[in-house]
Length: 457
Image (cartoon, rainbow, N blue to C red; front, side, top):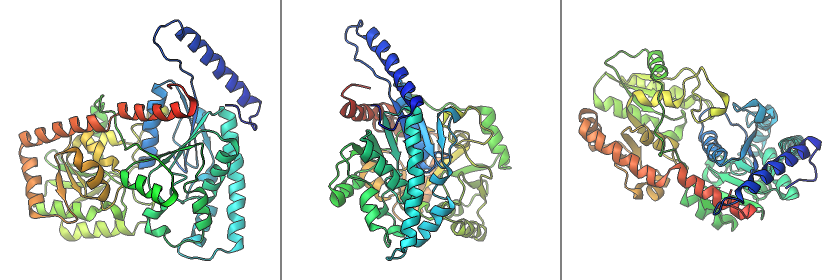
């Protein structure tokens, strides 16, 4: 598909793709039983693709699967740690861009919108819209994947700009929704109901909506009448993680841990909905100073008050809390080569146990990661876990809103019995392989591409 605003460079890219596709299909026609393949240029769009937040990591997984199928993937965001040759960096698209932060201060927590705010939204929208057009043109894009940017209204101008382009060009688009605005109380009072109905998410015929849990699918249909496909978070369970012994040892040394000290890992960002106070309570209840609570991710996206409160709570309860001081990198981002920062894959191997007592999750990346690294887990029964994950039959230490003596005893038994631990982690790995593997993601994405392009891509 060649869009009306493509420049010469974009046209040249499209011509090259057509030639390559013709060459491949001509060869494949000589092979009885093979289906035709046409390479697509696919553009991922969000406010950031950097670090280890859930949106960034799921985008990395989708990109991996699509590139394995032969497609090209490109990146548009306000913060990027992708291949520079395939990236289109627009600082104004970041949710922390100064003008966008000012807009958010004026529209959330109040009902009335000043005309100056409206003008500012449209000024920033116009700027970003031109940049998205250039992104599509420069890389000759055939398909867009909007990663949560048409879902949660952290950047209203970006959402409007992207919606207008999708409507005007009719470019095929997958809108991957991680958490809707109606799921967050901070957005419940706002002065932008018109924009939310327009673009978060937009109801357009050339958009395929993807959600990550069944509750989101039902609520989207109820509120908007839009149908969607459930694609949960996944990992490559057909290929166990590759572990660099030197890098993992360097990470452990960076925490100043002695040889007899053990890590209880909380592999999440420091935000209130992660329920990290329950992890502190668990360590206190173990009554063993050799167990240290390590939190792998940084605070900042939602302020530092919760982080400060956690550190004070840990001190009061006599729990040794260690924070990873350097920013953790995305181990699934293979496009940037080596990275001096530790990745999640360097952190998990040294953990004896994983705590995941979240109060709310759209799905739960840390849960799958713990299973992937064959680690036992304490998990809180958040709503998505109850509906979509628990029925799969995982073997876990489960708390229901509060930590019980039974939970603590279960954790002690796992830590003290290698047989109990092995049975648990092997069962969980095989269960996850059946339900949350790359093979399933590949199948779901192929179905969407068939609907768009009429062939098996």
